[in-house]
Image (cartoon, rainbow, N blue to C red; front, side, top):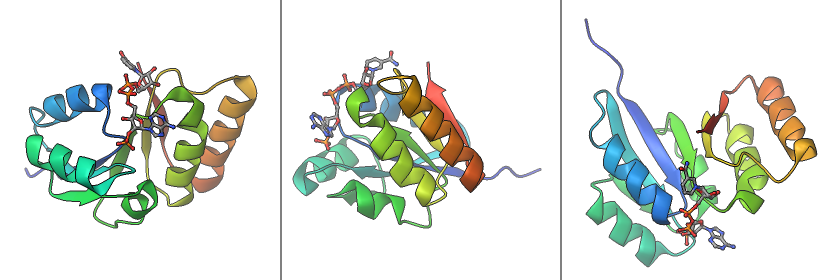
Length: 125
Ligand SMILES: NC(=O)c1ccc[n+]([C@@H]2O[C@H](COP(=O)([O-])OP(=O)(O)OC[C@H]3O[C@@H](n4cnc5c(N)ncnc54)[C@H](OP(=O)(O)O)[C@@H]3O)[C@@H](O)[C@H]2O)c1
């Protein structure tokens, strides 16, 4: 029996992203495919350090990559709604760092968009 390889993208090359990337490299059937940072040099460094395939200098470029199966959001929580929305609008399943968002209204809007797009949205606990 063969299993599909899940190609992961990460948004935000900060502290917790380094832990996630390290662990991802140890999980069978997962490939750390792409990292997106607001700065391409930072993305390139992260890519090389954690063995990703692709580095992007913007989050918008990453969500448009058709190779990506799932996206881990590792930005500050004040951006979780905006970055989850960006992913879901491109039908990319989301694993979003905790806290999920700033308040109940943001979380409800995120869940609503997940339902509308029929795309998985999950908090990383
Ligand atoms: N699950 C856990 O146990 C756990 C542990 C620690 C943190 N967290 C959560 O994970 C999230 C990230 O935490 P972290 O410690 O990794 O933070 P961090 O080191 O500051 O990294 C956050 C990254 O977000 C990106 N970013 C986008 N817009 C930003 C802005 N305006 N200001 C600062 N950064 C911005 C940056 O990446 P680029 O420059 O590459 O774009 C930055 O490196 C937070 O929500 C935090 O609560 C969870």
